Length: 238
Ligand SMILES: Nc1ncnc2c1ncn2[C@@H]1O[C@H](COP(=O)(O)OP(=O)(O)OP(=O)(O)O)[C@@H](O)[C@H]1O
Ligand SMILES: [Mg+2]
Image (cartoon, rainbow, N blue to C red):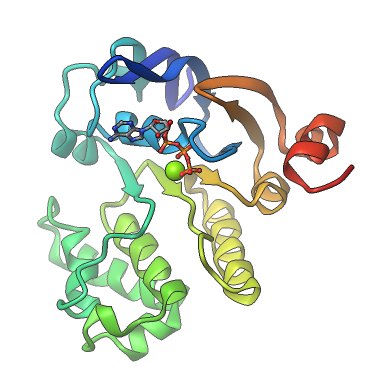
């Protein structure tokens, strides 16, 4: 069986500066794969390239067996690749419900859309309670829930989450991680970028450690969680 996502020798540059220097990894259907690494390692650049927002200077991206090289960003969403970006980017003046509906902009199956809005409310009850309020009134953690809910509205085959726990309290972070685990249990395939290596590796099937544009180490979540160099560099142990 071929992987749902295949990234091969991917290179991405900002002008002359290469931010991603030839990385390769795969994501199988049903898996959670995490990219961890320090600030500036190239994690966000990688996700933005997979979404079609940045153009690679080299390498291959295949999604569901198809090359994404010449596919524009909006068609990539239509193919089933959704992105919950770093910093959330919700629309603060629109209601929570309208933000969710935006995530379904490519769909026309009204009953299915209503069902998925309800599913988002089941996943995050606070969003349902406040559905008619402006999204800007939500707390940071609640806005993160909205960003995840919105990404799910496109019925993605692969959900990419860029630092969903950033800036959240420990309790909110646990809630977000529990939701990711719940989505995984429901069969959602997830590519998770996280600074919180402990949380990400604990729920990931596979992980890759990125440093200055390259993958330095790969393994199962469990192996990386117990790897001495990972523990020293990312889990604050000496
Ligand atoms: N628009 C840009 N123009 C020029 N350089 C950029 C741009 N965006 C990112 N970079 C550089 O590319 C490198 C990779 O950045 P990227 O945002 O992908 O890292 P990251 O792993 O997501 O980091 P963080 O954990 O801080 O979010 C960094 O050196 C960054 O300064
Ligand atoms: Mg980033």
